[in-house]
Image (cartoon, rainbow, N blue to C red; front, top):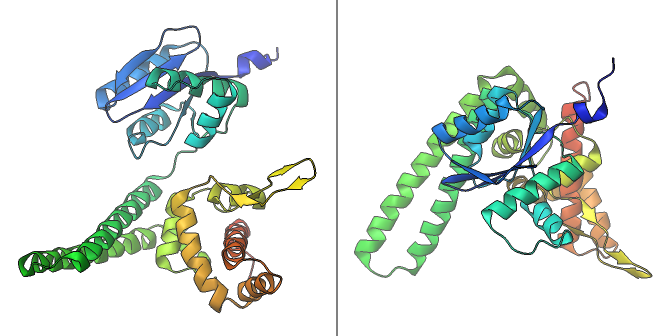
Amino acid sequence: MKTSEAEQSPAYAGVDISKETLDVSLAGQSPSSYANGAAGVAEFVKALEKRQAPMQVICEPSGGYERELLEALWVAGIPVSLVNAARIRAFARARGLLAKTDKIDASVLRMFGELLRPETLAAPSPQRQRLAALVQRREQLVNILTMEEQRLTQTRDPVVKKLGRSLIRELQKQIEQVEKLIEAQVDDDKTLKGESERLQQVKGIGPVTASTLLAELPELGKLSRNAVGALAGVAPYNRDSGTLRGRRTIRGGRVKVRRVLYMAATVAARFNPILKAFYQRLVAAGKPKKVALTAVMRKLVVLLNYILKNPDFKLA
């Protein structure tokens, strides 16, 4: 007997995640809340496992507060989707839901899942999870270092200057330590090392950029050219209406990925023969330099995706 489509389709749980709480919305039930900690997450996962229908959880990125929930769901084998917050807010406005509370957000997430059935997020390997943690820590340290260097230029008191320089030296030391840990993590995993080496064959891609892409864009090498551009946040979108042809703009995607692609594209536009020619051709055609550089970013991520998807491909 064939299983009906209704039986195959999962029931959706919308989960709004904050530092302290998981607010949950399930169809036909009153909203519920769990503590966002080991005990609360375990209780929530156990409640999902008791349900008769297969479940899929829908949530948004929450600055890292979603990590414990994601890991517990992966261990339990419960599918989970991590949806960009901008999409959820646009969906809520389209439904006429202008108010915003944690319980309303959980309900919106559930309805989004029921209507649009987003793809699930695959569990990363432990090695890739650790790489992501190290890459994130490096970025945090670099951001702190940048702020401290800016503060130092505004400081006049000699004692404060001395303390600032000491802190900057310590931050630089920690960044070097984290970079060595990142390098060791990549070298210790055959898959990561091979992918990193292939990415770095492209001029403009160095160890930091390669590690960030592997950590923040684990789907790289498994997507279509359009999908990888959208996920990286460098796909141009039309803004047309009737006879009006608006300016195409990029939006959405993963901010950290787009940031490292920007830095890589500035190098590639100068030193990568193919991408340099592409950039210069766009500028010569009258495109603003920022627009041309964005096009290089898209070309770059599409190329990197193709390289990982086709291991036998040889760069000229």
